[in-house]
Length: 232
Image 1 (cartoon, rainbow, N blue to C red):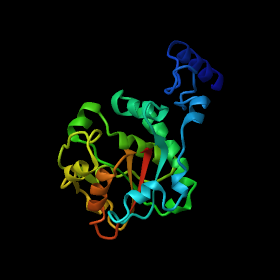
Image 2 (image 1 turned 135 degrees about the vertical axis):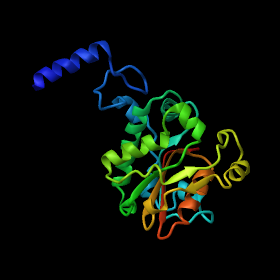
Image 3 (image 1 turned 60 degrees about the horizontal axis):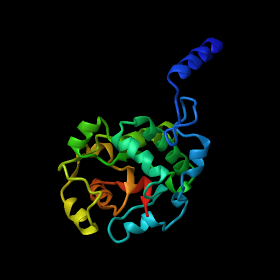
């Protein structure tokens, strides 16, 4: 049976080669999205193991979080920027799941995050999610959960207001745009839980702050934050 399955897989790869999402060159096993060369190019931050890392400092005096971190540095024209673009604008859900699995390795390797109970993806603009077909933060959460066994509570929080993209807005404008954006729609899902709020890229942290503030209004909750990348 293994021989037959192997032959079928070889036949599929011959006509539908599964190539590296990063460089498009190497033909990979279907369980992988990046070749070894591209993997080595991903600029890991090591933030998850560091108390007082730059992600945590963004929330000092703004949001009482337990711990926070980001997996990789995000810079212009970098590999991680191309991968995020694939996830957000090219419909590549598989790369989101795979990058979530990489995040899971960072999280599971650090005792600072051992007490996490549930994963909550930052809710996406409803119109944008309908157009995209999915929330990229949910794809990351699903990848994390496949390795680091925590339930994903996608319906716990909703976005009330369809804000415009925050990408090109200044820090103050971002904060102003976030007022009243999020509501905890299913408080029983997060009551008395240590929540890990997950997003793709952190810049000012305004969206995460606004969402996290609503989460912390629910009785017994505590909050940590994880993002795929950190903008420098």
